[in-house]
Image 1: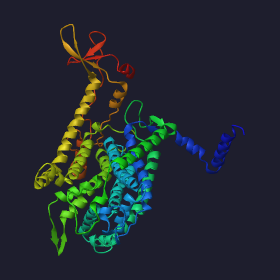
Image 2: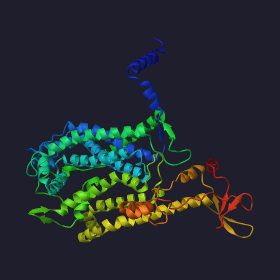
Image 3: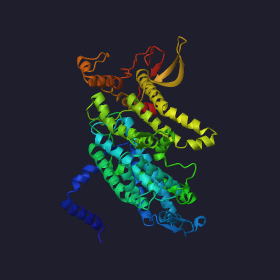
Image 4: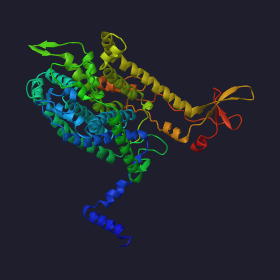
Length: 553
């Protein structure tokens, strides 16, 4: 047999497929697609790979889980619960842990991957928000990302409830109560979910169908749409040398990105497998089966739902009675307000910012967070709002551990939920402006070296060196936040603004949000007294050219 026969067969197979599918040009074009090299662009891949792990481990678990609420006596290997009456869902969950080979590992990997999936999506979304990567033409992709996050929260809730243990049952009780609190439709929604009076016999089977069929299908469709739009619109890139809105600087899909992406998937899979092996999570056998009359102290939901639990704990016991109907505000407001504020704000923000700034240009180079102080401050205020609610979900444990009054914790949380975001906004804004001033100073006077030099006149100065070319290009990539055309920069309303209150509001918001907060220095003074160094008015000396080669040597 000749050595060239195998390559010949492969070439023939390739020609056969190309003649019928026309895939050669498509593959050639897309295998050379350029991907930016910045490490933050890998954050979204963590969520993608976690979703793949969820599909693999979840498929394994479906072979052994029985989504039935029919009560049976437990007869498995876990002796402390032998003979205890429990639902078949809980009994099969115990069997997965103790009787199925590799079942405990698969179940823990599934749980850890779920946490990493939602955590990766959250961090990826924060990166997109703070960098302004949601701007035209990517507004639709941003909305899809927000919907993915919302569906992932519901998917986590349904999966978390399936084992029917005491901890997940407490979450189910809260979910059913929230549905009942909804005016007009609450009773009907509760009936659709529970199938009658709580807990009924249908809630676990219905959650199971939602968890393994409905939501994964929608998530898979939205993830596919998200990736297609990302591919078609091309990736954004960080500001830097030779990076513009008309190009992408990075490595091609094949072989660089494919090798990197494959290794990153294996690394993510390895981390999840290691966590599933050595880090115990959600030991349902310790909680026991769920009964509506029992509840355990110190219960904590997973991190992605903790902010809703914190809101329930902080809300006063208010209710409104109207025409014989009661609105339990202590349940309705915590269940709807935090989620509504966060998700609605995320969806509308790109369009509100476009309306305020009047910026309808395409953006393929992202902003550094410091260069849009108001956007960064709004993001930090939202994170603080979420963080306070998340922390208050553990207020009973914090009070017990630090020997504090639980009432004091609740009052503190009610104050922080309003004061915290405002303080975070102010601090973040001042930090962004300070960083802009530091960038401008580095361009105008060079970078501090810590080297003190004595001049012939007896004067002491600190030697400054020019910034690296790559860093200077990154700093000079800053663009002022646009202001709508026709806005009076001196603060005096124009004739059109005076007669249209909405235009006046828009102009005021545009002046506050946009504009150049700290202008960059136009250049450096290199004309020194000695011919080799320049000195500014503060006595600082800039020495030598600021090339990357000189700095690295």
